[in-house]
Image (cartoon, rainbow, N blue to C red):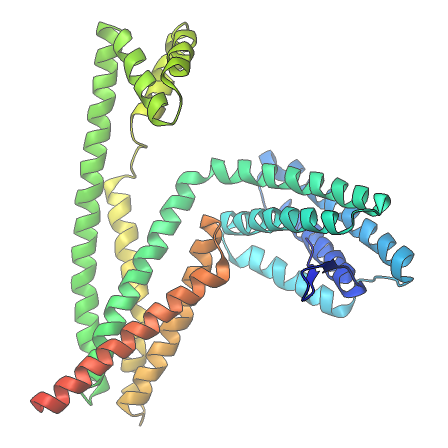
Length: 381
């Protein structure tokens, strides 16, 4: 991975600090891939070992580039060793699919930056070929990681939904307790009110998730039964459904018809393709969906209500406890935003900061409303 510098005139330049940064990124990637090769199953072990070896070659290229262009040697110093340790630690603590998504995003950004650099080095044939070779490797990296992500698509979707649910709970309960903090001076009362709201919300969200997922599952199973009946009575019904599904996916009517004519020669392929293209993806088990929703809803409420319970044991003013709750919730929301943005392949900084702004904004809004009500209506507890 590489960092490039763009001058005021828009011209891209390469200096030693950029070469050093690229070298360090490759060394970090090499060590992380090597470390992950011991953590993943046998199916992906060889892939990670090959990725590690590729990154080692890239690091060697940058080391040689530094010596030839700047007459300087690149080494793995204490600071770089510390970064490698932190990345490995994150690989142990965080789910593997999160790390894979993060690495895939890094490879995608790296390939983009290398293309820009190659254009900037136009005229230096040796340097251009060097960068071009690295670009090919980075694209291969991305392809390998994307295959791993596709295999875990259902798990990713489930985790993203859980994190979104947790964030919703956090904002909802935080807004409530902060609003109460503007008119109630007793932290314990506020904490209890937040806890009651969290418990009530958990039952409501759990029931909603169960009924919604059950309805989706019933519709899915009904569609499967219709598919079986169509196949048994007249397979041409499946051909029609598959053709319509292909057209909806963007294929022209003529091309879709020709493709169906080929596929229908294999009844199994016809059935399976129709199943995957004409029927929505199979939903989660209703009990599992309800359980996940309930757990993450409670977890989302904790950063908002715990400070009030803990603060009630110490001589801390309600307003200070409210500030602590907002700060803690903002941090959790930032991390949740970073987590989901990486799983979605979006900008980490943008999504995480946006989450944090929403939390702080909701808190300020409810506190302001509570304060206005306190002044105008004379409410104070």
